[in-house]
Image (cartoon, rainbow over all chains, first blue to last red; front, side, top):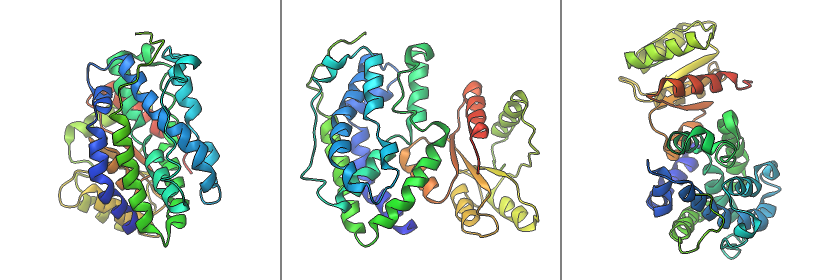
Length: 201
Length: 123
């Protein structure tokens, strides 16, 4: 288990780093981040997460038994609403489904690993936003990043056990899919051509 | 607590006092010392606050040894690190860490993090 996870981390690290270099990621972590930058970042996540949860989660119901509790699209919607993006604004966000990428259990598992890992650093992002945008300004608007609160570690470990079990025997395909997911997200987060409507800021 | 930075230890103790947390805190300054003390104990601590970047034996090695040992694996290990990189967090959790606390130079942040960690429902 440990060697597989180590391989998974090390072999996806280059793509993971690239994702952190996108304009959307850099803007989010900049000291001069604005509410609009944060909304853009959440919108990009929404465009990926919504389709992934619709198409891919059903494939994993038997291997990750608590997968329904790991849905987060509604949190992104709630955060966007609180940031002044109404339903009509959300409807303009481009979405991707990538059904052709996640066509098997192994590929679904690789994608899920990346998506579930995206909230691990959520507390730090929340703290950064509190400091830069202000605690009051961000109150009630960071539900996605603080989804598991102090249970973040437990939820991650609770995911890893069934994940490793399900990945057993198809490790290579899972690693490839996780790597591809980071690449897809890198490309996706480079897509800042759309305009969000109803921004408060 | 295994932490080689004296200032971090001082602030940690201050925060515990401010939070009115009644913990019997024993501090060691490197990983070798931590493992030696664990070997000698008959009753194990409820928590180990483990700095990742320590001399002689780093926190990740200690974590591996603690979680890989039948006698110690149930001790709650809380990682202390300046790194907030998800891969570093994943590596710690993969090795069995129970909580990952990002060190903050802001005292209020530090206090909130410790409070959040200790308020968690521990098994």
